[in-house]
Length: 528
Ligand code: GLC
Ligand code: CA
Image (cartoon, rainbow, N blue to C red; front, side, top):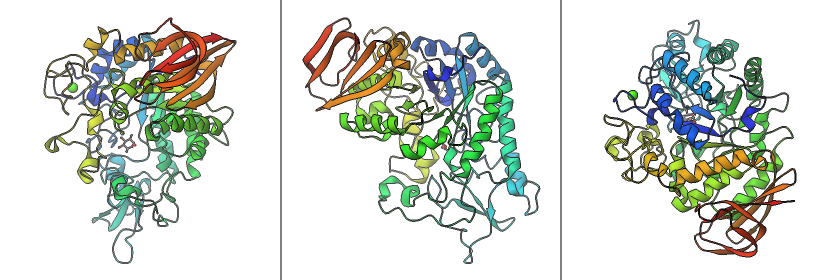
C-alpha cells in the first residue's frame, strides 16, 4: 500500500484489544479473523489505523503482554495466515495495522529466558538481568514490580534473582546487552516485511535500569490506594537517558521501511514526555499523551493541559491525545455518559492524532466483574483497590442478546448488562447515538482541514465552558465545551453550528452572549 509521508498526522487510530473484539470460533475469546470480519465497523467510524494489542504466542499471564514468541500468532488468536489476510484486506480498504511490541520483557516461557535460567554460564544468561542475593539472602535492592511485590524473583537452580518490572512471569530483557537490542530490531523487520504499518512500543521508559542497581527513594506523597508500585519514586528504574539511544536505533529500522509509525507508551509529565520525540535525532513519532485520562474533568484543568502540552512540544513534534485504553477505566465511567460525548468532541477536535479505544465510540462503560470471574493479574495481586483492568476489557457488544454478537460461546469476560442498549447494531439505527456522534466527528475532522492542520488557540474558560479555536487558511473552527452538568452562560463566536454533542443543532447560527446547555459541546465555523 502507498503511505503518504506523514500519514499518521492525519490518522484516526482505533485501538483493538483482540481478545474482546470479535470471536469467530465460539471459544469466547476474540481472534484475528474476528478483526477481519469487523473491519467495516472501523471504516464506518472513519478511523483508518488499527492498533492491535498483542496476539503473539503467550501463556497469557498478562494476556499477551507476556510474549513467548515474537514472530508468531497464538493459536487462540489464529495463525500467521490469518494475520496476512487481515493486513491484506485492511490495506485493500486503506486501513493500516499497527502492532504492539513488548520489548521490555518476555514471558518466562520464551526460549530466550528458558535458556538464560539454565545456568550462570548459559549462552543467553546476559539476555536477562540476574543478580546475587543481598547479604541477608533477600532481593538485591528495593525495586517494586508495577503489579505489586518485589521486582525480583529468586531462581533456586542458579541461586540468583532475576528482575521483572511486571509479573514474575515477565522477566525483563537486559537492554545493556547488545544482542538483545539486535534481536528486537529483527522482530520489527519481520513484521515490517509482512506489511505492518508500525508499532506501539509497550512500557518503553522501563527499558533501562540503573547500572549500579541503586535503591529507589520513597515517594513522600504515596497513598496505599495508589497501589504498592507507587510507594517509591522510579528514579533508577524508569526514563533513564540510555533509553533514547535505543529508540533512535529502533526508529532507524522503521525509517528503513519508509514512513512506518512508532508510538511510545510513555506515562510521564509533559516535560519528560516530549524528549521521546528525540533530542539527538528522531525517536518515536507519537509519544502517547495520556493527560486526558489523568486530568480532573473540568474546563480549567483541560485548558491548562492543552496549553502546557502545546508549549512543551518541540518544533517538529506532532501532538496526540487519548481518552482510554486497556489499562484505564473507561471514559464513560470516569466522567459519565453525557460528559463522554463532550470528551469525544474534545478528543476529535484537538490538534494532534487521536486514538479511540474500541467500544468508547458506543459509550461502553466499565463492567463490574464478580470476584470469581477476575482475570487480570493486577487485580489478583492487589484486590479491591480498583486497579484491575478487566472492567475496561470486556467484549464488544455488536448486537443485543446473550453473547452480544461477540461470541456464540461463553465470553472470557462478561458483557455489560446494558448490552440491549449499548450495542453497535442499535446505535447504527439511532441518528443521535454515541456511535453517530463519533462518526460525525471523525467525518468533520476529514472535511475541515483546520481540524487536522490548523493551529490551536485556547480562547478562554468561562465557568464550566472551555473555548478554543482551530485556524487554517482563512477559516476558523471554534469549539465550545461545557464540562458542567448545568447550563453555562458564555460568549460564543458568530458562526454556523457544524456539529453539536446532541446532534440536534446543525446549521443553526449562533454568536454573542449565549448559554451552553448542560454537557453541551458545539463546533462552529466562521471565515477570518
Ligand atoms: C503496558 C500494557 C499493559 C501491560 C504492561 C506490561 O503498560 O499496556 O497492559 O500489562 O505494559 O507489559
Ligand atoms: Ca475465538
